[in-house]
Image 1 (tube, rainbow, N blue to C red):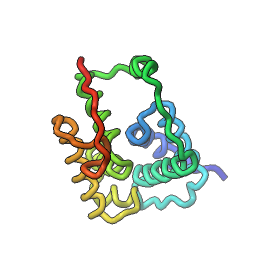
Image 2: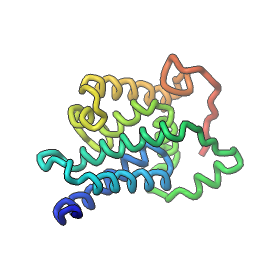
Image 3: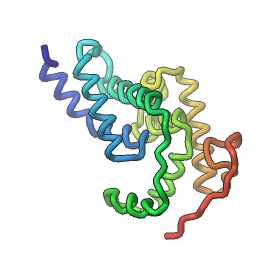
Image 4: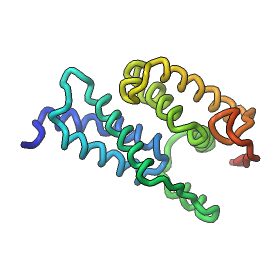
Length: 183
């Protein structure tokens, strides 16, 4: 038996938020679309497990988060973009309004965060979930979400202010010289 039409409508209405969250996790449009498709397939396959008293967006974000963690465990590899393809990759991205330099700086600062910090800060600040809702999605206590968001803000602020001392994740990460972008 397939999912009821009301469930499908809620699913369709949730896709933009799910897509935005997926893009913040993987930083690649195609990989984010794959993650969204995977999450939607899982949701449709397990629609009977959905509790109608729960917000469907939170349920889908949980599924996407877990699917992303599954993919990370499965792949266990690092994709490195050769320097000669960086400009090509940046040009291929869809143009967005606003300050391109600021977007690039924010994206670079988000990439510097650990996955746990990035997930927490995106759910709370971008998706505007409460700490309790984000905790539900990430399956951790609300205090842990608050701590991750606080630490992520510190790391991002230091990165954006140019006062950072480490390349990834804060003071315990190994320091390396960083290049500054001139626009």
